[in-house]
Length: 104
Image (tube, rainbow, N blue to C red):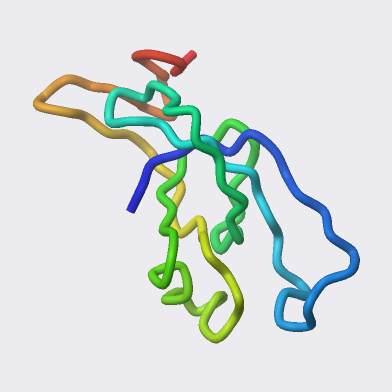
């Protein structure tokens, strides 16, 4: 699993029938300190995330392990919206009171 921030959406009106009905989000990967890594991915949104949400996402074959993506040609999936995280006792991110790099 990776941590990322939802920074946009992708709309594709013409697509494979197995992708019909799926919402696609652009996710910017962040490291354990909430600093952007410079990597982006388009992920199927399985949990209703929105712009600015910190999320957990999986890529590769793990992306096809959710109920929504099983048997679909997905290479990344958002599977959780993060409420908070800490590293070695230091609060890094909290949805209630964002802290750390890029948390405001």
